[in-house]
Image 1: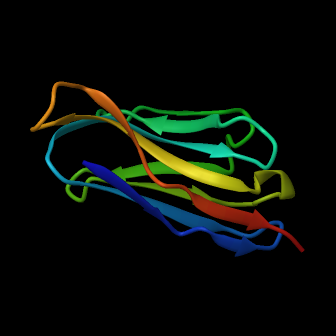
Image 2 (image 1 turned 45 degrees about the vertical axis):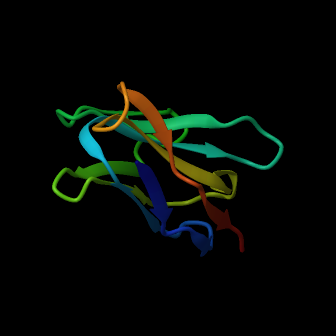
Length: 120
């Protein structure tokens, strides 16, 4: 089972980006999916997650600007990021709590990270 994140890049303050993270492999089921980020010199922080029933929760730092969504048919989670600020510069990681067909679970899986740089 693996997670593949994409969509990072460089954007000016006030701009938007959309991240994607697709799960693949021997998946039996996916519970929650979410996003974390790690800014330079800082610890990794949780920013949002979405449950299998569609319940969403956000960190205060991104509430009202970021939107998480999920396509269950594609095993993919998205992060729409609007009004990006300098403080949003970070490596963004997706994660998912999944049950694999090949090992006991559920377990938490992580994507490889995608860099988002906000600069003028």
